[in-house]
Image 1 (cartoon, helix red, strand yellow):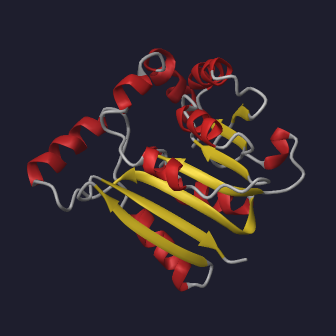
Image 2 (tube, rainbow, N blue to C red):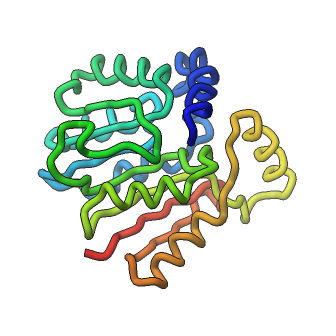
Image 3 (cartoon, rainbow, N blue to C red):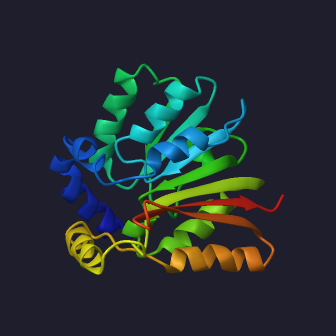
Length: 216
């Protein structure tokens, strides 16, 4: 994602950020299951790339008070809402946020001296034209044996064709694309011995969940 794209994101979310969570809960499925099942150790450093309003991080913080949580997002406008949400939840000491692209965030920007243990991409890869670069950068910021967790729009394989067409047209308005190549990318990494991928469809393929354990 370029700097110009970051400006575009700010323009898009300058007003949407006020009602983003209220509307997205009706169609961003699979997020809560990921949060419920995410393995969280007492010393884990967990970062969400494209954290938006910090909705997921607040839920994680409430569920795991010992967790050390971080969020980056390209939109400074969206992070205004995220910061307010974290403060309202009383999690300012636990959840740290920063404006950054998916291709240039680092643990050091949060004052950390070691890599992240887990990365979360919740409905963010489908908004990135440079998603491969973003993931490779993410791997470089994570320890060997760390995990990547993705939830995003699926291929709607088990749903009517008209629904897939309608959903695709609607998502186009938000610069969102279903990217079947993401699954293929992780399967290729697995074939190369870089880790183990687990893929699960959500709601008949409306969305998918992918967990990747990197080689330690």
